[in-house]
Image (cartoon, rainbow, N blue to C red; front, top):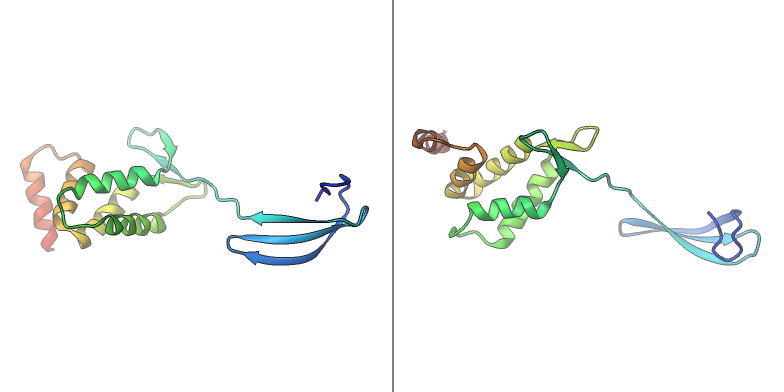
Amino acid sequence: MICPFCKNDNDKVVDSRVSGTSIRRRRECLECGRRFTTREYIEVQPLTVIKRSGAKEPFQREKLIRGIMNSCKKRPLTMDDIEQLATRVENALPVNDNFEVGYDKIGNLVMQELKKLDPVAYVRFASIYREFKEVGEFVKQIRNLDG
């Protein structure tokens, strides 16, 4: 680590402490004797969504929540319910080595969670996600709720 005072890169760590999501290290420069603090953070790779078209875009939690909220309009779900559902979906995402996930994986996870939480919101979400074109597709989806 380069000393912020004398610009030499000869130091020793005199104290290390975990501080939330980082490690705080107290260092002493072996050249000038002054002390300084550094922090180490885990570098989180941003998640990329592979869309239906094949295009890729950064994962946006806000977009996930907006999609869920559209399905839950005029339903007895609180914003807290929706936030928790989004968190469960995020935590369950099967990410590959490139930190990419397909839109289909996200949609299926949302549908699983909505099915447990609110059947009407589930059918609404499924109709948009699966792009229903006929009434029969709605009926089939509703019948699947029982089984």
